[in-house]
Length: 115
Image (cartoon, rainbow, N blue to C red; front, side, top):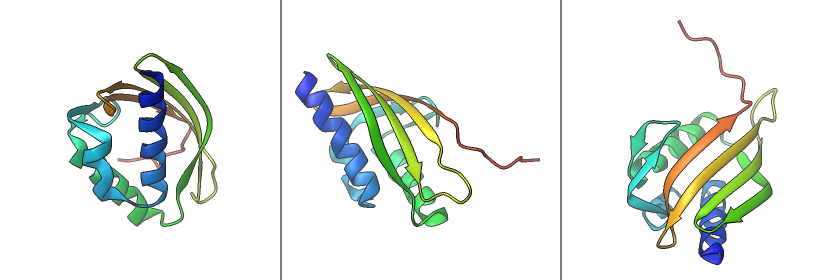
């Protein structure tokens, strides 16, 4: 399972960096759940990626560390291409049958205050 989990992680980050939103159904399970976004399904991730790429055309992630234990992956990432910041991200996800089924994440990204 470790090799499948590593492959799923690297495939996800490559698709994000390549702006390959159409790859989401091959990367995420049909019942995928994002805890940070509170959304389900691969299309929810494709839509989130599209919004981020539209807002920040130069954004990309760099994988700093991957730790894999069975079907669980933990990743430490750096985000580049955001104005005035280079946030770190910590993501953890569960892989099932070679695709990502569930995701948790924390970020140091500074977000604008909203009313």
